[in-house]
Length: 333
Length: 266
Image 1 (cartoon, each protein chain N blue to C red):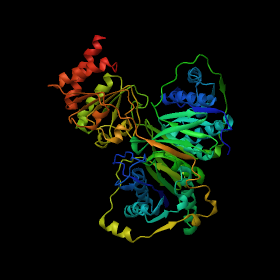
Image 2 (cartoon, chains in turn red, blue):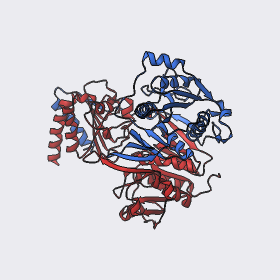
Image 3 (spheres, chains in turn yellow, brown):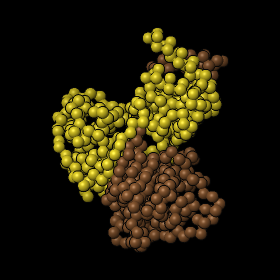
Image 4 (cartoon, rainbow over the protein chains, first blue to last red):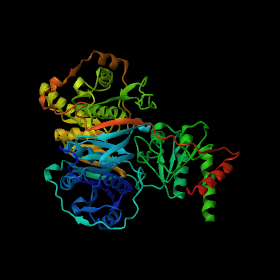
């Protein structure tokens, strides 16, 4: 297939409950960078139902065109259907580059699309350099201790999934892009799997990827009872609870809270690590956080290497004192 | 039930890997192990086999060194193992690897006369973490795909998978055959025993080469790879901030919160 025959960047903006997820908006910034370097245009796409508000929001964030597939049939996410819709959109739009968040959905859909278009695909992109249509994608290796700069060659489309928090959300643009509503039907025989039951185990969703504040606990919390301090601090700050794998294996908190290589990659404005030693697997999942506070008994704990503020002490004793101080600080505002 | 498990040998993910002077990842002295997610996939497959009967075949693309990984698999649940090895396979990207695995599956079915009912892959490999190969294998085989499993069951030709979500889990049905990718289940993979290790040592691991796979294979190897690494880099080291160790926890907390306020982090 000939390269560069196509002209635009297609950015799929994932939504949850009718609202764009953070990475969906962030990748519009990346789409603009790539498109501008090659004199291309940005088309943003949304799939779901009841998306008028979301589409308007995206239209004001610098895309040249917004395509919305708004259909009650697509209210709930289904991997086979969404993959089919996106395949059709790629056929219609003929993009040079296709972007999607490296979310549960993106990880499932994008490699399948790449196979369908016999094109190259890079995953979990954290940075990009773009010149004259040639894009270099930076992706993590070995849990993030090494970065690889990759190029995609001999491909009709360059497929990429983008890490949450790696790019800023775009500023509001001067112009609002036109919104085009589109009907895309997926052949019935391409729907091969069926969700029999969607079980909500958690009373509230654990949206670590979109959280501004995350308070995480590790093995150093010592017990399920002590781990409640992490939850209390998170609640006080309006944040989400995170955890390391050891804390989850102890059964103190469910796996949905895992931050790190085999959990969620996060980039909140504030990250508080309580009783966490700082193993590579965990640090690679939180090192893009804006401001990091770490509490650990061990003065030499690796977590202090990535912390803006490190408190040497027993998290079980320090957290209650912090809660007290934060309450005071809040009262003064 | 005939089960195929695709595994990859990777550098031990407990090792902290940096770059050598020549700018490539320093893997000297790093142990090669079965990718953690693939060990979960094999354990899940083994439990399913124990529940419904059948056999497990493990395959992997790589050099002679990958025999060790396959031996390990034979000692913890697999009955057959094949090494997909050929100089022409080297440097394949995820799509190339998926093509080799797909062709090998067809070859093994042709040889045994028994089609596979289920194909297991790990969710991703811990070295590159692209998570592409399993999904692309499903595409090439034109089979249903269920990703991110933490458990599985099988009854009357229907696979029911427990798929982890951000809110809990989905129970997803698919007709067999299908491809599944496995995340971390609630159980840990079993360890080999001395007896199972000795038994595995005696089991054959036959190689499968380019010539064995025939013409339908498609483009594989370094020249056909659609992604290429131009250079490696190390992430910028974050400059460690201030460490606080006051006499009491209260004093430490006070100083820390004051600094958070100053940095507008609160």
